[in-house]
Picture: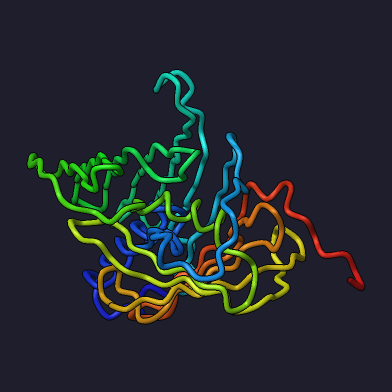
Amino acid sequence: MLKSVPTWSGFACLCACIGRLAAVGAVLLTLLVSPRIADAEGLGQPTRPFTIGERLTHEVSWLNLTAVIAMMEVASTEGTRSGSTSAKLIGTAQSTPIITKFFPVDNRVESDLDLDTLTPDHMTFRRREGKKKEDIEYTFHQKEGTVTAVRGGTTESLPIPAGTHDIISCLYYTRAVLPPTPGASLKMNVYHDKKNRPVEVRVEGIETLDGGWGTVETVRVRVIMPFHGLFMNKGDIYVWVTNDERRTPVRMKAKVVLGAIVADLVGGWSGVSAVKPGS
């Protein structure tokens, strides 16, 4: 299978791509998206489909090879900030043994989320891909409309739109706000790598999917990418979330330069409602 890859360096780049996609919220929907409420169409009232203690695990595969195990967790931050209601979002991505042999991936993202506004206060990204080691830290000043970024030993303050999210908090906001109605859409903007990046998320339809989670009714969501190349994606990203109050992402898919990256839920589906025969 590995012989089908044009070059080892190209395969290494794809592995880095998989690791980055997974680390920022179990791959795809979390990429480059961040809500801007004023631009949303047909949105419902924000709710919390996720709870403290939720942990979702996805297997991320490429060319039928399981390359990365990605995990998303909602943890408590009780006692860290007096008088506030918050949660810590944790996303990790670790390469499987066959990938680790020549291109290890061990990424971790942590984001402190304000549960009242569903916006981030602080994010850290520990990136370990091959020989590359990088630590990134963002502090969001939502009221002031700025973010303080610490990267490579350099600290700078940059402007952000109101309601800006990071690369992991946007998934949870989308789960809370975007209604499961075909045609509903959400225009978003995320701060990442010194840029505010616009993306539109659109509900395309309702589908029934089979997997380790059973047979479930899902909402197919399309993430419309106005640019290409950052993560080697060759088009839009598709996400399937359960059509219930939890909006659990069970499958995610994106085309890359060779084939497609697919993430399937393999753990944490307890509470996902299966479709009854004949329903």
